[in-house]
Length: 303
Image (cartoon, rainbow, N blue to C red; front, side, top):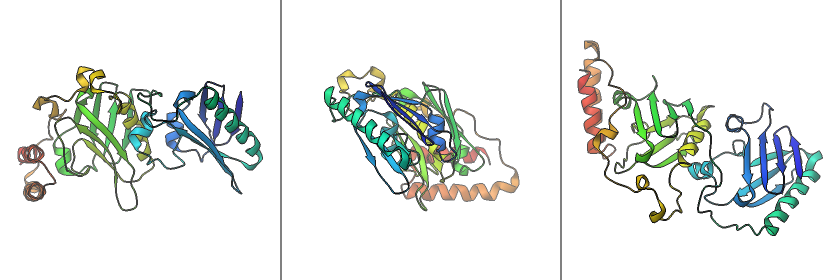
């Protein structure tokens, strides 16, 4: 067995799997602390490396493509501090880190673990139920339904359409993207047979993210959903019936909660401006016909 204990966390290798436990140091990211302990089977690994530095070193695991739903959903966009497959190593423990690397590499060689893509998820993804509040809403997942609830910061037309409840079998894909520079991030759910060009600010199936502390936690919701979607490499013949695209009834896209009560007369001019704005978004192609109709009806009900 090989083990390295650091303030950043503890990695233990028993020959069959790596146990990764995040540290309790204040520098450990919120995502890693929330995700908690991970057990990575040897068959999920494509490689391991150790990089020395003057002030600290870094252990890095490289997982096989398609082995982990978290990496699949985030598309390589996790920062180094949020990446659970990296460990900061203090200079006095460089020898232990190199020993762990040798042990893992020898096991990969002896077990003849392929480095190519995996055809199924080899890690289970975050546990459910799971709920995260960040950006302009709250995303919850219980293993069967995704629920999106909006807060006071949500764009008015998006909030007017009401909270959303998306059955897992109606979700074609999930994507998490962090805020970068002046560009906002998002957690987006793509619904079968309902593509959209709307930016996350207006998309009722997206949570817009602005780069605050809890934003990375939305990646856990994305990973939990990804783990229960068909694997990208799974042949269509092997998919369950619910995973094959099919026509979805319009009722599936209705808001989970009725629109808010009618606005006071003082807001009448604001609602007229909102209608004009929606018309411009529809004309420019940002909103689809269906999205425009639903948002327009929600505004009209408030007049």
